[in-house]
Amino acid sequence: MEAYRRIAGEEGRGQAVRQAAHRLERSVAVQNMVGLYRAEIAGANEGTVSAEEARQILSRIARNGDPSVSVRALETLARLDEKVAEAAVVDRSPEELLAEIAAISPIVAYSLAIHAGEDTKTIPMSSELKAGLDREEEERAIAWIRRNPQRAIQWARCETKEAI
Image (cartoon, rainbow, N blue to C red; front, side):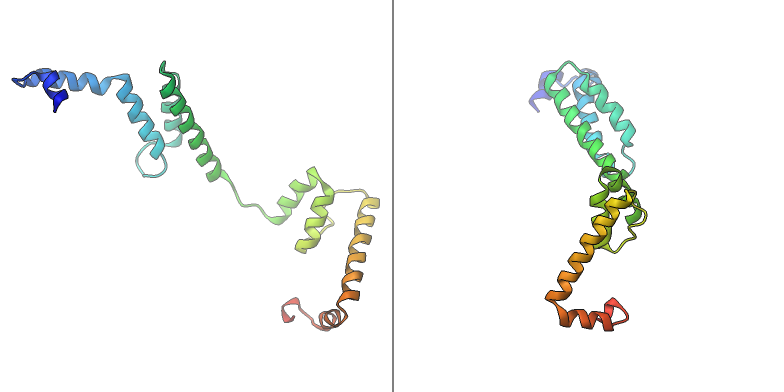
């Protein structure tokens, strides 16, 4: 109410109030705040602004002269980028994941494939390395059988894993 009296004066000049409201609406500070608000809710409410529009608004705000507003705009832009990246994650098949892991470390991919029951033939590695890993797996299996003979017998007699 005090702001209204300052703008319009005590007698309440309507034209002065409308002009001041228009100037205030078009001010950089108000536009920045509206832009921050729109960018913050982008994706949370249908019909607001797209992620690309939010990026444009935030980029314009980040170039503003006020450092605190620029920092807040950049923080919001980073959160928006995180949300977009999370939405872009696509589920991949185990084979695709193993291939990606194998490109980094074939041994880790091989070990994961064995424990997940996946085919290890698709993992690229030398035949010597593969033979060594197969021997290690056999040794682990033999050690388990020696520690659990009754369970190994039960396992050998069952036609499916679900029966045990």
